[in-house]
Length: 585
Image (cartoon, rainbow, N blue to C red; front, side):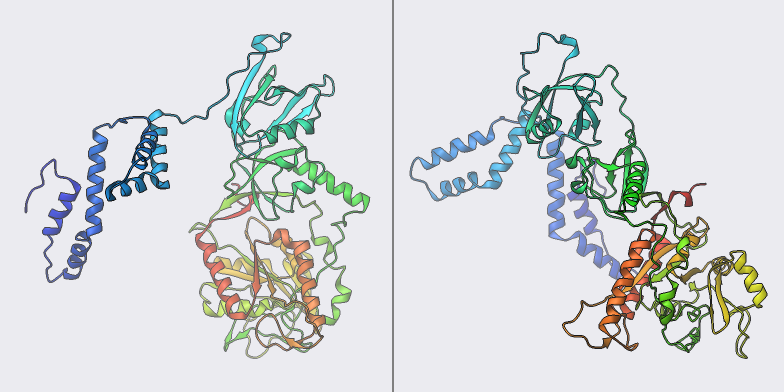
């Protein structure tokens, strides 16, 4: 086999390697494939280009001239001054093409090392009353972005003071402007007698270079390291609608469920934060937790906001509306424990249930929840998956399908009941059969996440039943009333909450019956039914939406099952944001 010389290039090496490939009986297909790849003409061209660039780089090239663009313009003008041959016409076309002109412009910029923007000369008309060492002239370059600083007027002295510096903004990146600095001039215009809103408008209208005359604070604050505090927003926020914000342009809009990185909490009223995943590096102002809670308390006191302590209990998914339904857990001939939904209130009883469970909701105001990234490790029990559903979602059927497809991976908690055991049933398979006294004692000791009565028999799902499933290294899937979420949101279970709601069509022009929008033919529904479904989804979202990790819109059973299956698979291999208290050790 020929030996490569020390000076052999990559192209020569490739050619030599290709010539040495000899297909044999054992690896014929592999060798033919490699030979075809190495013999590809485009690959050979790339290798030659690579070698030329490496040779050129080793020569440490320097620009021949610093004005190639000007030279090209002179040549083009000279060509146009007289008759042109075919070659000259082609050269003129090349020299005047936008692409070549752009390349030559970049070449001249690099050759001249003209990377920094051109700033105006320093002003030399300083105020005589200011000592030279106490005045700082700051020149910044910004595009259409805000300066990234807010100002206030000192009530005692009347001076215009820098109130805060937005992390990642133009002022912050410069490192020259600090909180407490006194602003005197903007582009030579005095701001001493101007209102703060006039100064803000002057700053926002300045484009390109901007020159500030400031008097540094007596003690400049040390620039704090960027915070690693992350929170999940539990409410929507629009700065343009907030009259209390010190600067609407500096505000950060966000939606409920957005993850925010709080970069500074120096101001107890207005935090600075960034949206995780946002390409904008500049932080924005958001109301602090304390300030937002005070505002909500005031609005409740004034009657402009409903009291969260007395919410109206929404109607939830019942699974089945037949009053004589026993809803046993059979699916495709296979029994799956814990699928009974019959102990839930029947449809006609919903009106009288509005007061139950109202104390299950946390009375704290919904502002922010501190979170951290979490990924399930191989030695940890699977996370609990909790399904809640609005009317018509039929989450019981959805759960049945997913578990029936893979019963070795997914399971449900076996419920408890006080009804007599049927001949075909086994203890701990269909139900845990207990006496009424034992059931009442367990309910009194808060051992059930939810329980109820049906046909004078008690039914309930216990916490131990969930633990039993997880101990088998299976992912436990439960469907509960929304009120049960608070009980389940613990570091032990780390629940992933999925809100399932049917795709409800818009109200039709005439009142008539239609098939169930949740998927499948489960009877006919009227316009009143559709309106009830819409209202149910709205109420659940308003009261419990901040506890939901994923909303699943159920078009039909097959697509919803496929989407749920994908969510469960990602839970085992991807990381998710969870409350910080769940991952603290």
